[in-house]
Image 1 (cartoon, helix red, strand yellow):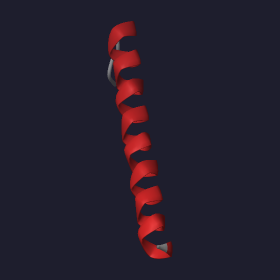
Image 2 (cartoon, one colour):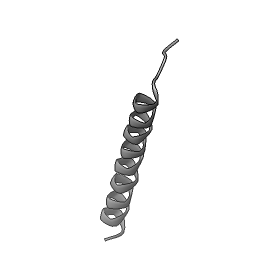
Image 3 (tube, one colour):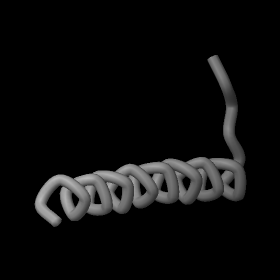
Image 4 (cartoon, helix red, strand yellow):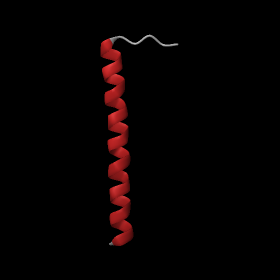
Amino acid sequence: TFKFEGKDLTRLRQLEEEVKDKEKRRKKQHQKRVQG
């Protein structure tokens, strides 16, 4: 098991959010290509 301090945990969440955001943008761009 990993022990995370507050900083590490918030940073981990930020990284997850960034990854999700990138995925969303990628999907949007892909949809534009398919439609356009």
